[in-house]
Length: 171
Image (cartoon, rainbow, N blue to C red):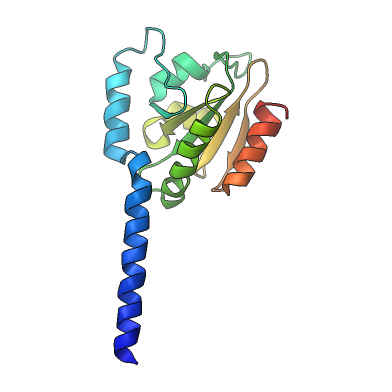
C-alpha cells in the first residue's frame, strides 16, 4: 500500500511538471519581461512598436507616453486607437503569474481587436497611485473616448472574455 502511494505521488508530480513545462513555452520569465521593457524604454519618444497577438511589456514611461498621462487635470484620456488592457502585476505575486498564460491566450485570440500590456507596479509608483492599485493583479481596460475600468483579482478566462466583449468591443 505504501509503495503504490509513492508511485501515485511520483506520477502526479511528473504530470504537473510536464504540464508546467509545456505551458511555459508561451510565457516569458520575469527576467525576460524586465529585459524587454528595459530595451523598449530606449525608444519611448518614438512611435511604439506594438506586437499584436502578444503581451507587450511596458514600463511607467511607456504607460504615460502610450496609454494615458497620469497627471492630466481632465482625467485619464486614452492615447491609443485600439482598445487595450493593462495587466498590472508584480514579480512576487502568485495570482499575477497564474493569469499570465490567460493574457497570452487572450492576446492571440483578440489579435487585431485589442492590445494587451503588462506593467510591473513595483516599478510604476505614479501609475499605481493614480489608479489606486492596492491589490494585484489589477487589469485596466482602456477604450478610446471613455474612462478606464479597473478589474481587480485573478479571474477565470471566461470572465476576462466577457469583460473584453462588454467593455472594449461592445458585443
